[in-house]
Amino acid sequence: MPSRIEHFGVALKSLQKLRAMQPDWKMTVITKFEFMNFIDNKFKVDIIPFSKEDLTFTGSPKSSLKQLIKNTSFDLAIDFKLKFDILGIILFRLSGAPVKVCFDSSDKSAFFNFEIRVNPTESLANKYNTMIKYVTVIADSGKPKVNMSKASV
Image (tube, rainbow, N blue to C red):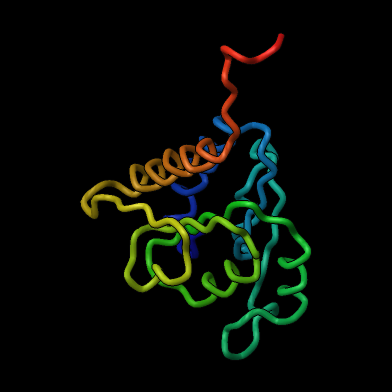
């Protein structure tokens, strides 16, 4: 999730939209501890909060946070941050998710499988909604197709 509170609220609305579109997905949100209370139970997500105490003096995650993330299974990781963030990159690598999605950025491209290009003049809400739209398309493209002409009922 984003680190700036004004971005967090908008991203949360997109997360709610994603939950409505994919009610069966198990979702885990990694966010700053102080933002944890903004995530209502209606989102039906697990939360991995972290604080400054979970980071080393260089800003990288301590072993306890690393282990918590490594012990969680991720199939898809979505970066809601618009700009490069080294902690975010480290957390994404720790997730082990085979599919990692971010907003288009030359600084991030080496760390992600998919980059979503958005118009820089679009509102933040539209940028996040574009991300959600394409994430669901990416996820749906991995589902096996059923040939109805040969399917037995």
